[in-house]
Length: 378
Image (cartoon, rainbow, N blue to C red; front, side, top):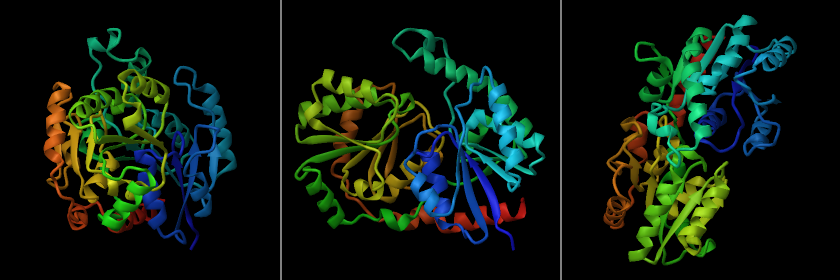
């Protein structure tokens, strides 16, 4: 039987939520039956590229999509599909921008064209245009995305989402979509005191209280608010350290704010890491005050690690798989979050792997479902 080739479409294969999710599936899928290749929209090498190629996948690189003048992109994509006729399935993870590759995929009569929703953006409000409330560039990007999302279902044959909130945002409340869970290998995240001890020693964080956050350094994650929370924390608990995992376009701005707040000696920025399960072992509390999300795999992982989690109430409550996560308003003063964090420090970690699996987020059973879908829709 010929191997089914699936073209996964991303911006770049760095360690973001959607990218980590698809790699979890890729590692577990039967690659004698199904092979993933990747069409990305950045020229530089990404964090997962070596692993993709080690698993047998190919990586094709395109220039970034210009939503105002997509003609050149369309022509390059037409050339690509003329040269690569092996794909019966195109699975696009570009949210509203999925309309661009899926339009040309439809033109080439590719039978299975999947648009996958990963994020639910907040609505555009007048305050978005007021200086210092939000970067104007981000607001313009959101306006473009709101305009483009109506076209996505026109070109897709199948609609996927990480959860209800993201799917309803991209496809509309009356549109059906399949929920492809942000599944994980739960066994990797079971709390191990020895790993906790080892990582604290390696990072010189023994006898410290570790406030943790994993997420791209971008506007959505609301790092500025997190830093102000932490600045208040160390006024009362100087033994606390903030560990940030991830990189992104706001790195310089975040570093500057850390300096401005005078907390540079209490913040560790670890950048992109491949050892997230181990890093979660050493954290005492996980704080995640995002403006908006889809259904973040990071919060599934943190629950699997048995961490007490404080997350923004703008995030879909579908992500609540255990009692370890509490949703808090980012409209509250930072002191409110500080008190919540102090209360969480007495929490003892526990093995949540069975709860995560029972909730439907174990990678093995989920991979069987998506594998069956691909094989039946090629």
